[in-house]
Image 1 (cartoon, protein in one colour):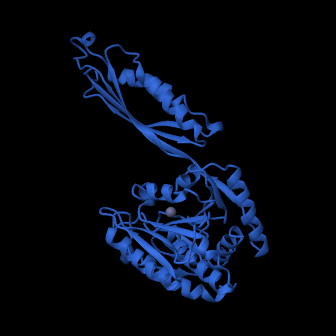
Image 2 (tube, protein in one colour; image 1 turned 45 degrees about the vertical axis):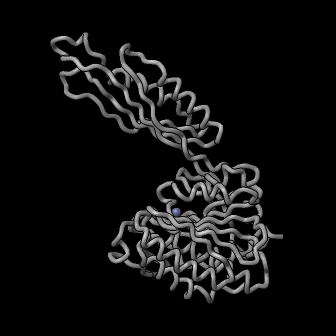
Image 3 (cartoon, helix red, strand yellow; image 1 turned 120 degrees about the horizontal axis):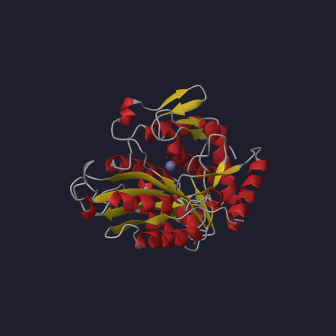
Length: 375
Ligand SMILES: [Zn+2]
């Protein structure tokens, strides 16, 4: 397969996409990015179904017009974390071996890589591009509220999921991500003057203090469980028995079964009070499943490693704490590997960069992986 010579062309398209603001809340920009990509896919013989969204950008479902029951799902998000005006402030630029700009590696380069992987397959005479179902979604950076059900639905019956988040700085693919959620614990007590008749009050802060210790004690770092009361608020004045106290709790898990266990434990802790006369209201849930490095993922990784060897690219993998759409495909039981985009770093910051030379090699890795998975 060719590719080195397409690098300049790929960079041109990346520049065009980076210079359109497509923050999650910039619907118009995401839809413009979607329209450009739609045209590119149509040139390659693909059909693009546009799922219109009101608040967020439209989601796109793409497959070749001759595709028959594809077994590989690929997911690449079009939104970034940057607000309107960022692209004008610091547009796409190249310095040395790196390219910069909002969303350059997370993940506008991945969008272009995916397109060129299909081109490479078509030019090599392989028909494995008919084995792909692609979702370009609009809202990953805020937890995929509109695209999550779509991703879960389209994952049904698939054998493999390739998620196009960028590779890590050191080039690693991503084989595990932690899941999680958040809770709010609201304690209601009873106010009373702390000097005149404190015995008539019921301290919400005292009650919450008990709960904070019990909740944090659920953490088990070895098992990858973290329960962190990260924010507390409460009381009304220094000389009032506090009538209200609130805790905000962040939960992280590494394995699916931990969600149920923790949900039960948290409910249990908040079902009783240590300070009589107080009342607890619990809100929240563990909403994001973890991406587990299970058997399917390991064998998919092995296959990608082999493909890497063929093209002289050493492939590693790693676990990360942050979430992505990989959690959703993985939770439906599909063998999932993430981080298949080009290499770069400092995502979500002004210093976000793409390692330009990894564009052709990662495109080739993706194309050959798709080809191998289709045999
Ligand atoms: Zn991303």
